[in-house]
Amino acid sequence: MKCLTTLLLIFIFSMNIFADTVSDKEKEALIKLYHSTNGAQWKIKWDLSLSVSTWYGVQVENGKVTALNLADNNLEGELPAEFFDLVNLTTVDLHKNKLQGQLPSAINNFKELEVLDVSVNQISGAIPETICELQKLRDLELFKNKISGELPVEIGKLNQLEVLSLFDNEIEGQLPNSIYKIPALKVLLLNSNKLSGNLSAEVINFNALQNLSLFDNDFEGEIPKELEKLHHLSEMNLSYNKFAGGVSKNLALLDALNMTMFDQNGNLFLLELNAEKDTRVIIEN
Image (tube, rainbow, N blue to C red; front, side, top):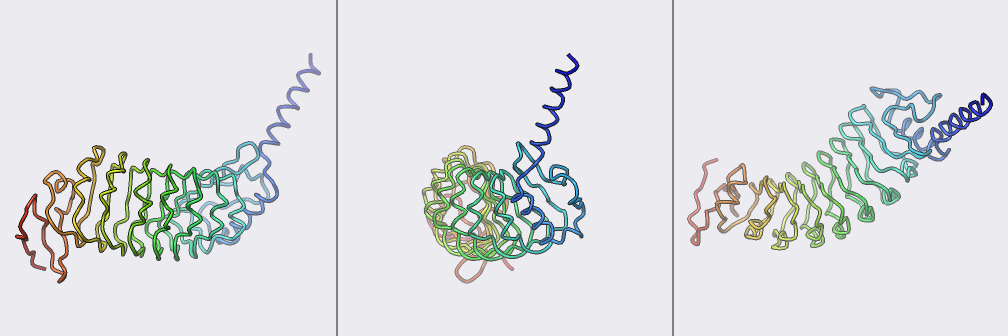
């Protein structure tokens, strides 16, 4: 009986060691990340002599690195190319650091990724088109960076996406038509960018939308009445654009800034409530 118990303990111990061991490739990717982002100055450092599973913010399951949470940990520099070898990641949370550089096209290596939060950093350049290949992505948060360029044309391929938070960047151009084909979208925060063009009546497809923020851009045209049919919409801000025409009282009540817009001369005015004539109220600057 003692022999059987001993064998059982050895088996369990061996299994624990196996589960705790990641591949050399994944370990090297993490070490490269540590050195490339000034690990010696992190708030909570890694002891590289210990097992990967003991490293702060690293989650290991069945010998695979599945999550990385290093938010607000003083990471500084660029993400190394090797970082994108961590192909089993489901969650990456690196928000509130000092990361620089661009998101590379190799981001499509993260086929299992569900959450990507690199907000409040200094990431620049355009969002790579290859991000649209992440079919399991539910939460994409890149707000408060220096991201520029246009939104990926095929962003609508992210049909599991529930949160798209890109505010406080330098994104320009029109909303891709495909964005209206994301049925699961609950939160769409694109305010404080350089977006332009019209807001399509296809917003009617956002059946799950709860929060819509587009303020401080350069949108124009009429606000689509289809927004009223989004029964889950409880927060909305469309102000400080160039929208014109009338708007319903119900929609106006959702906008914390009372539908305050810019006219073609840069003057502020309030959109009328269900008005047919243009009797705008000019606000003194």
